[in-house]
Image (cartoon, rainbow, N blue to C red):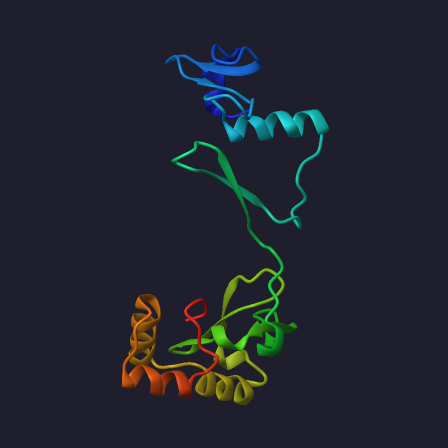
Length: 187
């Protein structure tokens, strides 16, 4: 029970008549009915979890809900879906701060370098992690992939500018030839 649940009580929804709605001291109503104007996704999920008696496991992908401003209906977006680098796969051998050997499968199109660290999106979640160059075992391979596949900051600005506007220039065309794997999604 959340702190603000202390200032609300269960009642019937004045709009749809369903039991299980929550009314606050200030008069606002939240309803678990998906078809109601006062629908609240948080209350719906609490009711659903209470009925099934299950909690989401930590390994399960989390699901966030957003409200569409035009229609008012809930839109779900799954976080942590499977991320597959496919043919752009790069295996990074790493020793963590405890001295344990780790192997990360990353997408070489997402490699970034900042000072003494390399940042990359890794499978299976697609989250971006930062790795110290001092602890990477196959640093030569990673640096070669970094030089070969990723444009500099100035080149990236030109690529992004023209890709977003769907325009072209001689410099943009040369950069597209130089970096055929680059895409706005990964850039």
